[in-house]
Amino acid sequence: MHQKKDPQLRSDAQRNRERILEVALDELTHSADAPLSAIAKKACVGQGTFYRNFPNREALVLEVYRYEVQQVADTACQLLQTRPPDQALREWMDRLAQYAMAKAGLADAMRKATSKQGTLAGVGHGPVSSAVTLLLKANEEAGTIRPGVTPDDFLLAIAGLWQLDPHGDWQSRAGRLLDLVMDGLRAGAPR
Image (tube, rainbow, N blue to C red; front, side):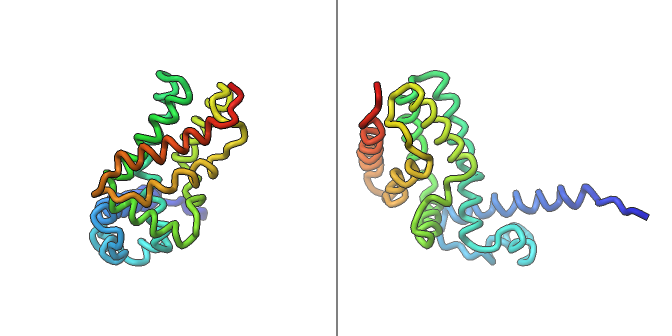
């Protein structure tokens, strides 16, 4: 006799995953080096469940980042509906910087996780990549940026954001960095 799978198991697994992400966001925002065992314990899941979902620190940090940054990514479409493409792109960059600095511990965890890979290209998936792709495409079609810029190019160009000290004068430093990136994107634009 064919046995049906219990749909409750799937929803329980999803709830476990979401609980881990919520706890990890809170813990990593306060301390980039929060122990994975403490995150699992606070999320009330066993080590096996934790590591099935997130086999290592890098996987967890990248997923927490993607999970949280969805809100920032969603603003790309809204900005493009109300502003010229180049203004929408530059304003979105500011919002990303504000988010990164508000989540200082998460930004620090992000830098540590990606420095082992030597690149932020691993972040080039999910909501951030979709937002960047949307903004770059709109700008390329409008002729406001040089053609052929990829999302990975863009993410590498703004990687300096994750080097800024959120307790220092990050606003002016981020503004200068993002202005430089924007100037670079405009260089060679057809318009």
